[in-house]
Amino acid sequence: MKKTRVMASLGFSLVLASGVYAQHGHDHGHAHGHAASTPASTEKGSNNVSIEKCWIRLMPYVTPSGGFFEFENKDASQVAVLKGIETDAFGQTMLHRSYTKDGQAGMEMVHDVVVKPAEKVHFKPGDYHAMLEQPVAGLKVGDQIKVDFILGTGDKIPVSCVLKSVNALAFEDK
Ligand SMILES: [Cu+2]
Image (cartoon, rainbow, N blue to C red):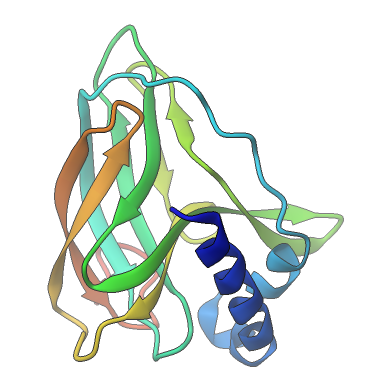
């Protein structure tokens, strides 16, 4: 991910944030305002992972869509590192974490998510999630898209993710 594109995207989202906050379900405005970041991990980790129940809350253009999934490290002794995701269906993707600080909801970018041996991290609304922007034309609810999960090892794990409606809160929803 190139830094210039990230910064351009942050500015872009900030402008949009006030109008879309209620609909989007989490607040992009505050976090993108300070753009807090955790330092990138130098760890490569294991490639013995499984990614399940991947879904994307498809938002009307130009609102960012949230991506959610269960990321499991199946390696009993090494960490696994998720660096990001990539898909032909969206031009820009990021990993984020939502938080509440002093009663204020916000989110921050994360360069990677390090998962302990034999643990699972649930990317879900209000927590770790992916953010997808610049959708290609014609995406619709019910579509399956291919998403590559990029690991610290450099491996890319292809996963099929289903597009869901703006009202979806979990994989089981439509
Ligand atoms: Cu986000």
